[in-house]
Length: 202
View 1: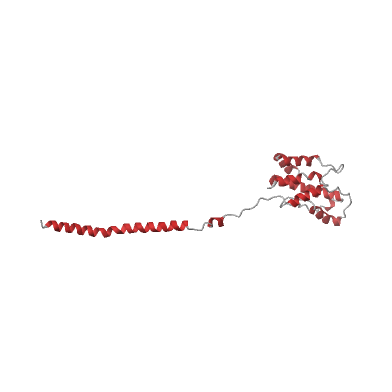
View 2: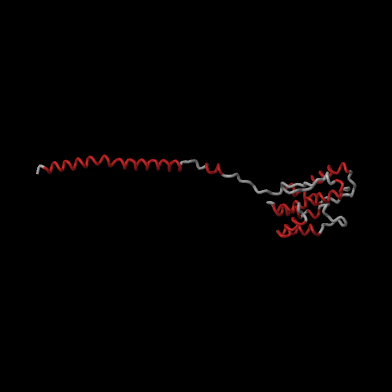
């Protein structure tokens, strides 16, 4: 019977020796959980405004300015000028004056080389007609590709009454420009694209 107490003592000593070694994995697991908790807390406490600083700025859609619509309406009320001759040395200045009175779509302008083609123009009507026809074509092209079709439609409604567009014999609005104005109003994309490609190319 003397061996029993010795055996119990040995078993208790072995059990006591294993307990300290079992704490190692538990401490490692607890440390990993603590690190994970810190990472999650840092993510939750990050400034909410950070994603907003990376966003692109909001831009407003392009529209035809109200002043352009006013200019288109005023030009439609302008009487047909007397067919007076324009001296060659005044042609460029007069062309610039006519273009200043003519409305153009946003970011579009008349790039015609008036100085180079001055020999083709002798009178005020011969100058006013191409200036306003070029603007008409720009509005047709803008209607097809631009952002503000409603604004372009409003301008095209006045184009048939511009003095340089009216028929030279009767000074009445020409049928074709009235047709294009109606096509723009009705949203007839096929007719507008055809006009842009056939009569307003370049």
